[in-house]
Length: 380
Image (cartoon, rainbow, N blue to C red; front, top):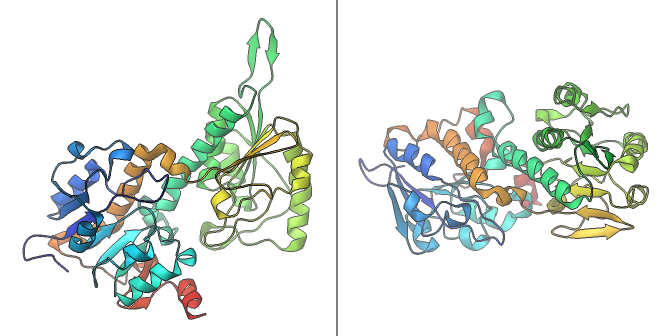
């Protein structure tokens, strides 16, 4: 695929339209990398403004006045948030799209992309293999979510995080419990430790024990392990959940702050903190549930709200990466570049479908759904 002989491809970046979304798919540094390869970039005016990248910060970019013009001209369309059905219908037939898609929640748009023979790469499908770490947008954005979750907790808690020795006496450090030790959980642990809290953490994957300890936190032992495929945790059985819950409830009860990060991609977040567990917590304690948008790890979580239940504050933040939009956009744009770069050399698009990264990240191609779980949903 090439936009015209010798001219390279046109990469298009529209302005994100979802409420609260401040990120942009390309930042100036990464634009320069693409143009060095011989490609051109067309962006909607103001696309990077909310991430603190004004139009003037971009060199070698053609700015246009509407998203429709970006969609009409792009050979490769780059976005952050999933395409809406209306946007999917504007993607040119036979072209390429890359961005988050959340296909299980976005089947109407996926069907349109399929029917328009768009090659769609869903960034959440990047395989969890060592070679693809630089392309792993889920991980890059999760690190931001873990960091921000702890800052929210520190702002919400009416206590200091660190131990302080003052003329008025010694202030004990806050007790922080992190549930789920993926990328977000590890960043939450590290951030809470930097702020001086006493930190413990739990994950059903026993392999995370050493990672927790390496950050200076204590690993909560429940006797339950659930090693899954691809670095994710598997679903627990009812008996395992009960055993886990008994131990965790005891640790939750004594925590000043609980940060929950436990999730399985494409599924509703597992319920880990019950109302009964919340009622055992101290008045003034804080829960920050970063899975709020996916149903929440806490029974009382409400996405986009702070619920106060018997003195305990349950914070359900949404789109945490957008709250750190500058660095989140930098990291995401690099993820996109690292994914597409091998296919964009020589001024054209040449995808090696034998490469497990391209094959695994593809949601749709040539009129077919390549992601089996999504194909089954559409067939059903």
